[in-house]
Image: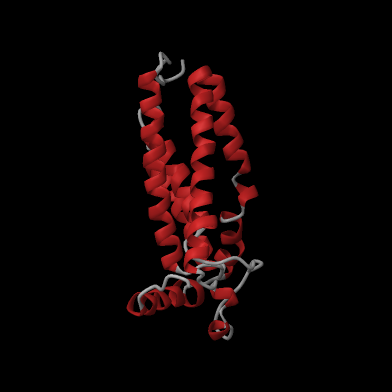
Length: 200
């Protein structure tokens, strides 16, 4: 028996969804937004971050990379394999009651909708990176959260998620990012590893 979301919350969620997916559209966003939520769009960024950390921070950088990957795995597992089967919410692009209005510009997929794994994964990675690198990278909080929010917004725009899906996915990812960043800093204190310092 799936867990139910309160009806009053669903009504508000559908109203916001209608604006983001149906009303506030234009040709420019139709072309741009699918790239924002495509995993291959960000693959060069992921690779650059991992290589940068390994090259500049050596052993500590390797530890950081392992925690970065673990953060992604934890967020993905929690959202996709535990919470989605628990709630079993249908995606808007698969919801028969919305077929006449929903705007679908990417393949819908057959998985459940709540919470959004894209939102959970990207907020987890963004928050983890921001907490652990805020002393090394100026404005990292702004760019990390903007990146995660853009990917989350894109999920609603293309028709595969509701706003509540990405909102709760973002909260889940933020909690996981804070948790893994705390573990990372705890590990640094427990072992004689050099603290991250700006490269020269």
